[in-house]
Image 1 (cartoon, rainbow, N blue to C red):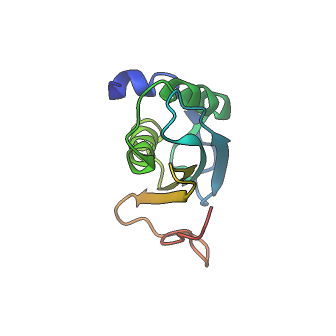
Image 2: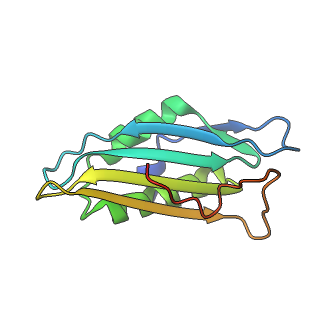
Image 3: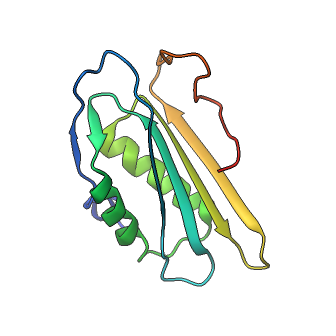
Length: 133
């Protein structure tokens, strides 16, 4: 799926009051059209900069990307990270994907990124937090 087409459902709005960091979390399941991965659960955590994701558009985005064939949860997580980074440009982002792979194993992937020079405003910062989803 072309990245421009893949990102089409995502909508953002301006972030008001950007003088403090706000940790935002959106969770959902993706009902894939392929049998390799069974309905991966996705946890998206991010610290907005100037734009916030519209949660309804994220749900539409998950439905939209469900039509693509994903070799594994790593590729899915990296695509979500890339798409959200492109549309919302958050200060920090973490994407967790948990799927059950063939053979019944829980397959968990965590990817994260942040803007250069970004440092959180609070102790116990999310950067490096790779705990279980």
